[in-house]
Length: 188
Image (cartoon, rainbow, N blue to C red; front, side, top):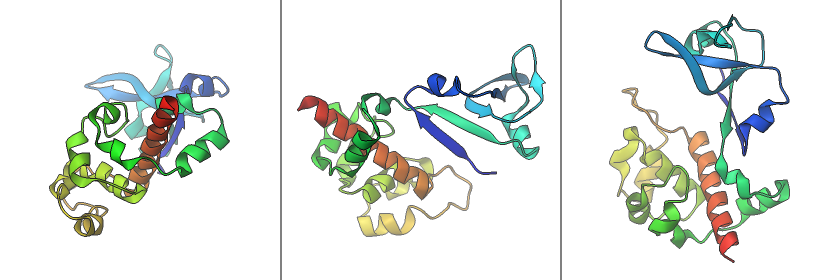
């Protein structure tokens, strides 16, 4: 099954335009609300909780298609599509990604300023690799040279340990750059 995540500044605003049923997950034996997943098709419903009657893992096996509607706060400062494009294309001040007070405001990298200072990413590709290196399966690459990092970071681990796929890491890296450029724009 494909994994579809859609980012919104306000997921509730987006969802009010659709008929959907909230996905569920298991917490022990209890069926509880999934944080972001919804179904836009008919699924079995647990009426008292107004949730899908089967957990998202079971629903996937039944070939129900879950879509994750995600709140991504970085979009709050984006005025329109043209502004977003500008923020995505604009070369950031890469040195700022080594400043604690800046990194603390950036999603996915906050709390990892030491890794950013050590690796000094200077491109989207390198920042995406840093995002992957932060994950458990690729932590051994911290401090390695970029040739070694880029040769190994996207190789799927054989032990099943959690890692970032290149597509996810690259998308998140672009998001970090948008947020970094927004911070700079708001200071100007």
